[in-house]
Amino acid sequence: MKTIELIVPCYNEEKCIELFYNAVREVFRKLPDFDFIITYVDDGSRDHTLNEIKRVVEIAGQGSVQYIALSRNFGKESAIYAGLSKSTGDYVALIDADLQHPPELLIPMIDAIEKEGYDRATARRVSRKGEPLVRSAFSKAFYSIINHITVLDLISGSTDYCLMKRTVVDSIVSMSERERFTKGIYSWVGFKNKWIEYENVERVAGRTKWSFLGLLRYAYNGFIAFATTPLRGVVYLGILITIASFWYAIKIGIMALKNPLAPRTGYNSIMIVLLFLGGVIITTLGVIGEYLARIYMEVKNRPIYIERETNIKGDKEKEQQALIAGNNTDSEKGL
Ligand code: UDP
Ligand code: MG
Image 1 (tube, helix red, strand yellow):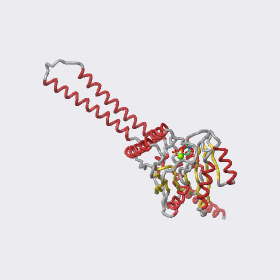
Image 2: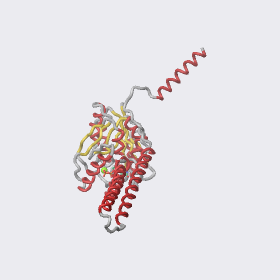
Image 3: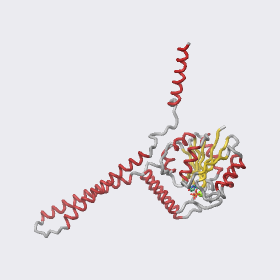
Image 4: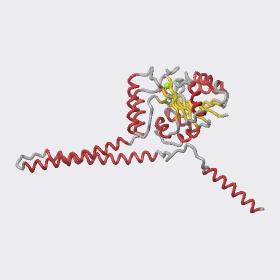
């Protein structure tokens, strides 16, 4: 029997913990062929979330509900990482505690992986009903810009709510970078993904943790974590200004030759020097920026590639086989 593990990041969700548990249990009942584990990750809540979780653990009995409590509020992305790196399930789902991610979607997600051969299935909101207009507009702009200037291919309305195979989980955990822009990471690791669409749902209780500023910071982190193209823009701008300074110098030179008796002011030479130096400085900054970006990407220590499947035996298996073979020859010698 395969095990499905639900990772539920919780920050000040005391009212949602039990409601969530009851709702997902209904779905589990419809899926008798699977074992389920719920892993609540308490992200340093300041209310009674942890107590609520412990209460649910008691109701459920050990094993099927477990929890990890973080020492302080690290943010949703870190909470998810904590859950993923400790996860053991064959399939792992990421799901919010506030029931904005309808648990029934797990059924089509499981089908996508089990029957249709996908590696993961991700929920996608088709409507943004109940969301402030400004927020929708900003998020649209964000997706269109980030898709243009990075290697990523993000889709508007895509959520963190997903179900994935063990291989996908392992590759996400292998990206140990500190600033975790989860949506970017999911897109970056690849694998075959199926989008499961649903209508936006309001949260059952409590309040959203996202302020407008928080969302802006999130978008900014996304750009910085994956985009290096703007830096190239800086280099081009610098080169352009340098060229402009030459063009200006030539123009002034020709004018001076044509009209040698015209009165000279210092203006022209100052402009040329200013333009030239400005251009050189901006180009240099851009180049330094590119190096910095590369160092930044490098220290993230991302894997060079991620494997989907192979029939080559793993190094560990090879080592073990060599060991067994070695033992055999030893015993043969002994005979
Ligand atoms: N969350 C978390 N740590 C945080 C903020 C949020 O673990 O610092 C959790 C939160 O408890 C919820 C999920 O992340 O389960 C989504 O948060 P929220 O509902 O506030 O976001 P929204 O749905 O409004 O985008
Ligand atoms: Mg929510």
